[in-house]
Image: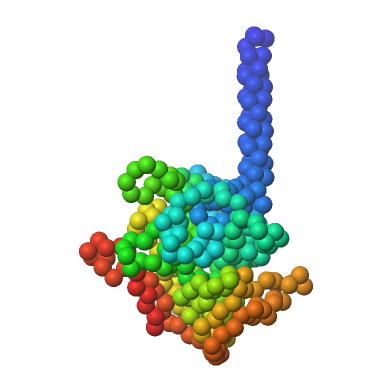
Length: 359
């Protein structure tokens, strides 16, 4: 009788011990997950993963998410995230304004080539290090991310309800490293920054070892961004460059009103370097713009304004010293109802978008 009584007690005791062990293991796993996949550590992991597969470079200060979203790791779905201190640089081979004679070398090379950010150039004037030009600087981005899309497969970045709060962006025309045809010669550097850096090899065609992920940004909203434009470049003597058209737009908003239409988006699929897909549809408004025609000067003078140590709202005067222009003019209250680059032959299974629509 005593053995029969002890046996159920012993079983209950073991069940309690096993239950406590499971709770401790799950608690430790949750703590490790929260520490390693949150904040600055998660930002470093994502940036390192991207930098291994793209021509440009990206840095992320931190990525924050709520513990209430942990169940979405199992079930899938949209997880709200807050991304801080995002910086994107272009490919240093392109930012050096390569000439047409160097075009053949633009599609390959060492993805870990030692470059230097343009805002912190190498102090040695004879240094072979090429500059990486800063393309985007923003302190705050909020969005919802498809957690299973980034966890599995090609680790694609699928976001919705994206809000970019302030910052600086640069759209600069440069050489196309992977031209589709003889007339496909230029592209905007923010696109090529996410192109794969192809490895050299003895085979026909282009070889991409590890293609970068797809970026699918739905319902894009931008509030208070400053945008700099450098279009139609031409190399001059003595390290100088000329752009046929440059501009700076301040207070740029994209679908940022109190009742957003949610009709602005960006889709970028660089997995096939021969037919990279870049689709965008935006409605843009800006408070003020300065347009400069035939703008020339040292290469280092064509960059984003450097923020002052006094705060992000205080920046250097535009344009930076050393630049000269044929003439300039100012605009106010700019409104573009539709700025789009989309394929116009979907029905024919032609997914290449090479026309820009402006309304």
